[in-house]
Length: 508
Image (cartoon, rainbow, N blue to C red):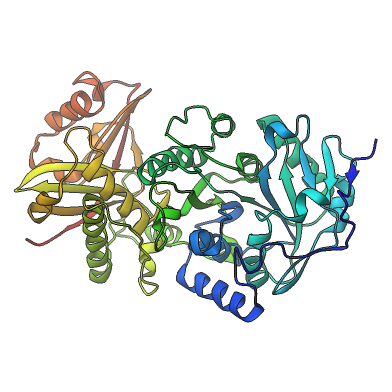
């Protein structure tokens, strides 16, 4: 049996289907809009070789600003062919790995994007892979990525694909087929996907955080479960992710070629757009899948440069300790404190929220682990953050500020009448450094993370002000933060990590 079905469309060029609706229909306006979005994305510092990515695919007015950072990163990659994986066909395609198109090119107002015809020809006889141009004819999830690609990688070829039945095994088989068909071509896999569909604004934020935590953890089976609706209980939610198959395939490919980290570049939803409906939204996020042990074209990220400087400088912090201390500019500090306060204020007032970091403050785009601490009249009012650098600094501060104000289970959510009495403090963490014992912990300098199995807890260096004795500091950390016996820090099976912070706060 042939795997080919033209679906009534035998044209060699697949014409633009959503130009003028999802994105500008005139070439000049489209190019100008794409360039504006790319410029607004600022500088992207992957910190290694980018091997795959995910980007949303809604109308540009809603999601393109979240997509732009991915293409900014992709522009520096050496690529021959981009496999763009759109929607999952899921239950409608039992036994199918993927559905491709064998046209010669896709067209947008910016011209034609060539299809890697040789690859598609090599794939068409793979069991489970089929050709159906009719399914591709009016679908938008691949097309909306093309104008960005035409600007940052003119002339690059594509393989347009929809996933069939989504499973970890099917995605692995599709990756193997792609690699075999590619020959010596340099592949890049881009998953075109939106996140939650149609929950209310607040529900979408919570649900999308959960989904992106699975992506960050490279939890392939968790994403499969997410695609089938497991664990999704928000009202009016159709799905948590519309193209999990593409994300799993891109992660599978990236991991196979050395990716060890997911870097989330942007996240939001349609409610963030001007006039967006907060009662029913679609979630968006973009991320790159990176081998942080390999830099692109010899370039170093800020973290790579700091590590190199530490090795070269005689007075640098010893290897047994955390990374050297660092600082942010006064302008960046002021911008982040304003961002945190304004995000909290908007939430208390139920105002539509949208933020774009200043292009000039490139340090805000560096991935960072952050804690935001809120105090009221000198007393703790909330403190939440992350220990891993998974988002740009500005996005990490935005998320942590909102979580500290409204999601710290020790406190009731912050109310509008409290805003004038709050003080915001931001702590940017250095990378975690494992240590053999508590002997390496220096009071008033190091924060400490303790971990044992599923138990973990963290104290920032600021806690030394209340607990200046090291044994007391570690015992309270174990008992009150990690749910462990007070003396657990002495055990051999307990892991200790130290770090430093650059902390700054509002003046009151």
